[in-house]
Length: 397
Image (cartoon, rainbow, N blue to C red):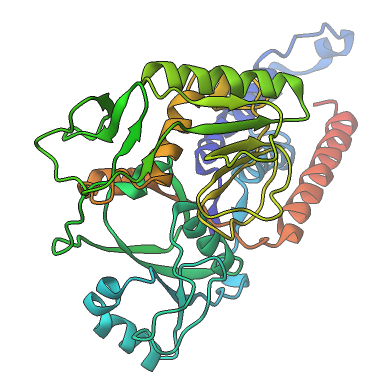
């Protein structure tokens, strides 16, 4: 037997209360004068000393009520009455050749044992041949969380195989099942050159050695950059919301971001047909997204089919979004911009402490334990209370 709230078992110690009250009640007896006592002979009078256990059954009944109450509050669970839940072992793999090559033995062994292996992509495809990478290899943290949620619909033990880099730190946390094992690796062989933006007025916008977004007329000497910028010319953004409060909030955040980093973003609140936008922030569905445009859609929960469409479930107002209330919206928009242009392609790996903080296990719900047990104990408790009251009134105790 297990207890959900075992601390309440200390309440059993309260059984001393009815015992003390019982003996105290007996000790408070009063001597009543009765005329016939003068006819009794003194030799027949007996002096009683010590403790006399009157109404013993009633005392035991009251003690049992206290003990049963403590037992009910501790929420007992009879583990022997429930069947163990079958837990499937599932392997989630980032669709990268370096990851598959590094964990080839583990994945082939899992397939040999009949365990499920899935790619981490929008479709969460199952595979029996890890060496054959899928056509859809888009990987971001939204896709990662979606794949974990998909395979976690049933009780499962998940093994996750991903590259360890700062891309994982773009979200505050990732929810995983309680039975979870993380396998990470650092791709030390790949050292791509960093992209940068060439914007009029602000010069070059890039991520420096300290992994900070900066704008400068000259590129940092401590970082190797690509020969040509990832984007040249002015950044153009469209802010189109039905909710005017939300639109004003996003406009203020976007202007703050543009001012801090001297981005000089051109912001439109009404779509111009001949203008190609680099950034679209809206609360409307994206019908035909273009690959070079970053879309941020608020107030909708949907699975991203392409990496440049980001969905935020909450509406971006101070009343509905924590990121707005805490003033983090400009910073998070900046992170999306960095990710969209891949300004940090090869960041440093996360430490073990950072990984432990990032992946948050969610407590699995217990199987519904015999509610009949708790209901039965409650019925017995009510019955004992009724019996105790009946006996107490009958014996005037």
